[in-house]
Image 1: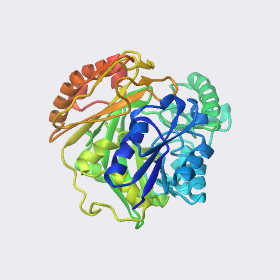
Image 2 (image 1 turned 180 degrees about the horizontal axis):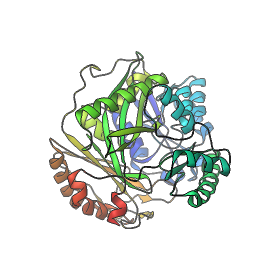
Image 3 (image 1 turned 120 degrees about the horizontal axis):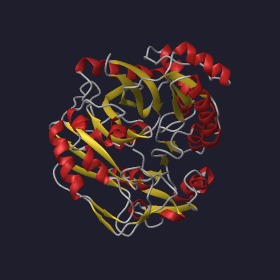
Image 4 (image 1 turned 90 degrees about the vertical axis):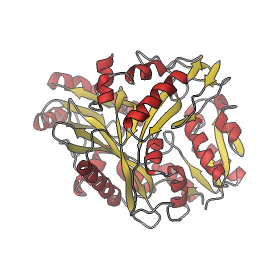
Length: 445
């Protein structure tokens, strides 16, 4: 097993990785920006190194500073968490080139799945269902218009190098396409340094369902069930649950088999997620993208399958067998995750600030993965996620009931907070029925 681990991330995910490292007897090293000095992940690591100012480009995305921290502390491995450099193939290669262990998939797999058009084509070749769309970037507006005419409106206009729900627009007709194409292309060039755009069929009523995969050290790829991620604002997730209330046993088998094929197509190792769109009216699903990292919502899978996914990541990176029997994976119970963000609960605009009060709920079936405590400040430099509230139970109904109680108990004073939104959602008949789609938040607002 890896003996010393540098966590190249911050907040709740760094703290969560450090927690598993401590349990396994691994020496943990945190890197942090000047703005994050004093946050729990910094104080809980065995060592901590400041790698730069608040600007992520000068700290959490500063490859040389992170490698210097690894060398100075004698780190044996680097875990990138999610976001920042986690899906940067060049960073993965640089880490391994420096003689360190990369806790994640190989750089070739990251590269293959990082471009949405290339990923679509690879998946189609592997027999994974893909939605009708372009097989190469729409080189200009005329090409986009021609592609949309062939695919049929409405269409989704997407940044080929995008991710995290960013760089997407919907066009119901040619006039809208002309506007969205220019908008998405400009955004993609600014945010990702790549203005390539693809055009796909847009499904007005769709569910977002993803499958957790794990590429084992022996070369096998296994699937650890699905997660429902349809409660979203601005194409970004707010709630995840497992299992999905929309997925029957027969559909689950198809989902899991397709996800395994996706991983095998790129010789995948370590943790990853195959994201799909599900048409509830036809029960057809289509490949959306593959996230070549640990997901924010991994805790719901951990409960349902009884595994610690960070431990499994470390075991794969160490060349060890998993703690579970890959041929006897059996789900149990139900889990729901709520993303507690520093944002307005109505318009979902960021609302950073100093935390005067932070009282977390507790009890049976309640887990809180938090990045802050009272006295900390949520700054405007990073994602607004403050904590993840994970509720579990033998049934979905029990998990929902625990969620209601936990949301009522969670006390945060200082920054704006979306807890009131979750209180509203947990009484929403559409959500409670389980028959909801990605439009549920917009219908609530």
